[in-house]
Image 1 (cartoon, rainbow, N blue to C red):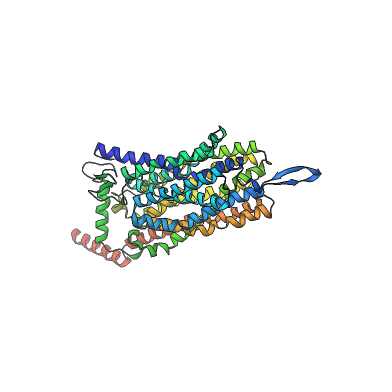
Image 2: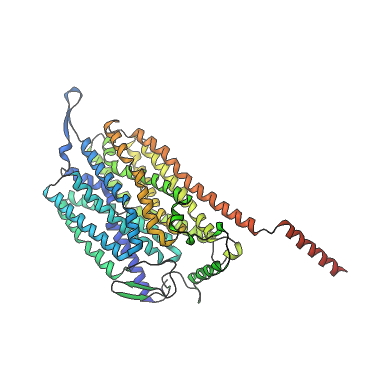
Length: 524
């Protein structure tokens, strides 16, 4: 850690405050189920409910159109947000941290105006709701990218920090849970959102006091200056790794990089840092990562957008039961901050165990091989969680949904933490924002499948999502292709390295003949 106490405090203060910011503000949209319950209770879209006469002249209120409107609001906002993720990534890579955070705060201001206006004076339109939800989601993703910056300050635990931040991002569902509990205690939704909008001052303070205006490079160069809006501090690579005598792991990495550039390498062994953005985008690794990410994202987003009508269907319309399961789901989402670091620990520990920088010359293993091997288990576990989650949802048993909640939170935590960690490890750091944004943008094509799924369930299947869930189970099997491809690629690189390291057979015979001649002369 830092060799200067003041800078050590600065590093940890930046880390902790960023974690709190992510936990309370960055991923509040994941509390959509709690928000929908409040909006239903306050009569939002209540004009879509109609009185229906059932068998035996029984009368009941059919609110399926209301559920459809809420699902479409979340789906359309998610679709648009992911569609502009590439622009967010380019903006972040080009203009840096401060400009990105200011843009996020501007969207938070617009979001606050829309919420205070629509939910105070009764403007109940799907367009207003969609714009508000879009502003929430788009500024959340800009805050989410800050986790990668914090990981650069803690070199040995970089993946763990990235996944920890994304776990806090998932656990932000507790914000809307608190709003729901406050609403049940008599606090109006208007006052709750006014308070959340006033909390924007926290983002301003952190932006200008603790965060750098541009980027935190990785690995940090020697003598790196940690600049903020209020000054600068000379870092001297102190926040990165533990010092051993006068050497650091960073110095060893720099020496390895210098030695690597002085030695010719085959095209298969070229380091990933030499790749251009175009080469990264059109690589098979990025393609299969896009498929893996899109399928898992679709399964999770479809569940979040339809969890309320699904619970209402299984509970046969009992609002008390729906409220209980909604609260349980929100409490379970809070555990995302505990689950996400497991993924980072798997990546960091597996890489550290198998590839030590000091032993790399002796073992002959390249850092590219180590990077590929370190992410295989993470990708496989995420795919396994996804198919388990999909199967669990398919079984229409209400108590079983407790397990569905746990699997959803675990899978979403591994996805949101593992995807940026994977891109930051496999591809050059200078392309992170663009590649991650492009992946989110292209995954929008998969999220567009939510539209026909929601319409099919509500208008054709009478609210029963069984057949849609079965189709999703089959689709989730495609997530295993990505870890399989990474594993095969790693084994191919390792075999090529071992094959190239073996001397030709004629050279071995020559060495053996020379040795026999020398031994014979010595015996004579």
